[in-house]
Length: 389
Image (cartoon, rainbow, N blue to C red; front, side):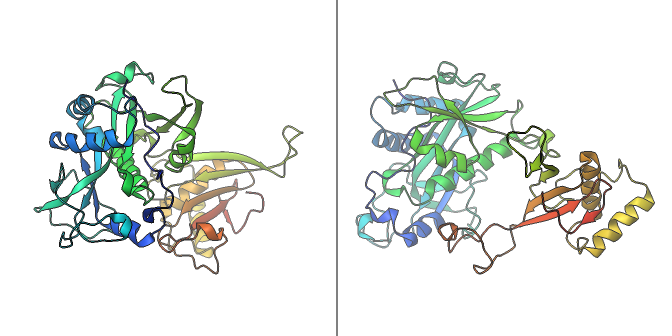
C-alpha cells in the first residue's frame, strides 16, 4: 500500500561522501536558481518519477494517487523547480562538480511564470512573461481531512480543518543542499496565505499534521512543528512519530505568547522564586499588535508620563506611541514587578566579535539573531533592566 504520510527521505543523502553534502558553492548555486510553484497536471509524470525513485515500492505513492491529489487538492501540492543556468555546457555528472547545463530535457522541463510562483528573497527578479527551462526537483503534497487517521487521509475533504502532509520529497542528487528547508519554508508561507482572510479558502484550516521517522524529527521541529509522540499508525517496520503545526488565523493577529516565569525557584518548593512576566512578539510593538489608543486604561496625564519615560530611554525613535502604550497596558495587566517584551531585529547585524552564539551556528550567509528587550513595571513605567526576567 502506498504511503499516505511524509516519508523518510526528503533530506538525507544515502551517500554522505557526495560533493553536494560538502560543497557550499553548489548549494548556493542551486538555491539561487529555484522557484516554487503549484504543481500542474502535466507535472505529475515528473513528480512520479521522483517519487518512485525515492521510496520502496510499498511506500511510494502511485501515479494515480498523485493525479488524484493534484486534481482535488491542487492548492496544497507545490514543487521546487530548478531553472537551467543557460544550458550551454554539455551534461556531466553533478558529482564531478560541473555547474553548467543540467542535462537533457526531462519530463516537466519547462514552466511559464505566473502568480503561483514564489522565489527566495535574495533571488534575482524574473520577467513574469517568460517561459523558463528547467526541471522539478522536489515537491510537497497534502490533502485536507477532518481527523488525523489513515482512513481519513485517503481522500480529500475540502472542508476539513486539518491539512495532512503526505510527501516531502527531494530528488536524491539535490539533497543536503538546503532545498528541502527552502521548499518547506515556501510551503508553510503559501499555506498561511491560503488560510488568511484574503486567501481563497472558504473554510479555514486549524493545523498541519504529518508523521515522520525519528531521523527527521529535528528537521520538522526546526520548521515549527511540534513532536506529539509515537504514532499509532503502522506503516512498514519502522516506528513513526506524529507532528503538528498550528496555522495562524486572522483571530490570532493580536495574540502573543505570554509566560509567567519564576526565576531562582526551588524546584522542590512550590510557589518559590521571583516572578516576572515575559511576552514574545513577532515584531516591534505598534506593528502587528492591536491598536489600543481607542480602548486604553490610561488618562492623558498617565500617557504623557509613559511617553516621557520612553523618550528618556531612547525608545520613541523605534517604537510608535501606541506600541509603548500597549506594553505599559499589558504590564499593568500582568501586575508583576516587571514584565519583559521581546521581539526579533531582522535587519540588525551583529558582528562576530559581539556574538555569543556557538561558532558552529555562525555562517557566512546568516547573521546571529538579535532581539530587542524592553522592561515595564506594574505601574506602566519602563525600567532599564530586570535581573530576573
